[in-house]
Length: 339
Image (cartoon, rainbow, N blue to C red; front, side, top):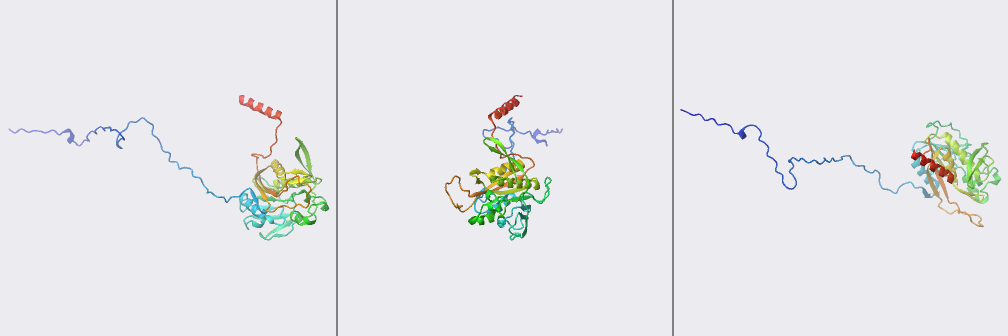
């Protein structure tokens, strides 16, 4: 008799996967395929690209004080503050010194003056209109951002000796005649029959001053600049640029800081003083007769850059409060904080 012996398959010979052996933990760093049960939070890596600084180190920048002439500094001011292609009107063209280094065809230019010394600018081949008063410009009133121009240049005579109602009383007589010819038309100041009121601070109080055709001495300078500034505000659009040339002076033995007066006056109109440049002449000024010097001789002038703004963000005018005013405001602010 034959006996059949049936062999059962062993468990590890089946097609089923063998159970995984437990991973033995060793001291030191665990294996990459080891299963960890750490409860520490998983740290995430920030893959956001880091901010990189743009630009490059250079000393080739426009600076606020320059020794030299008007032409070089004026070209730098336009390059910095007036985009190419804008419409610029120079209403006090004079002899055209400002435009000697401005690139040709960089801007749309219009030139005029009260009594033009030439009929055409030779560099830019642009006509110069005569008989145009900066206090009464032939442009329509701007409406918001719409206007006939984008930038206006103002450089009237800024010494009271050149602004007299009588030609015989003007400064720049005799050996100074060339100076008068360069900075004025050598004629008496024309009348405009307009009065503007301003406040001046004298002896810790506000004093009203009326600027009119009857103004004298340094007030004739303010009269010309302020009325021209009001006209510039009328014709310039919002964000339009006004570039003003001026110089401080001593009048009636009193120091008059014209650039400060103009900044405060123009900002009260609605301009913002965006920039200020100091131009220092490269030669010493001469004096005909000196008995006793009481003030430093002026050898610098200013270019002021204004922007017509919709709403004034900050003002350069500072007026000290009385102690009682400051105390009242302080108490009021403390009361608001408590409530």
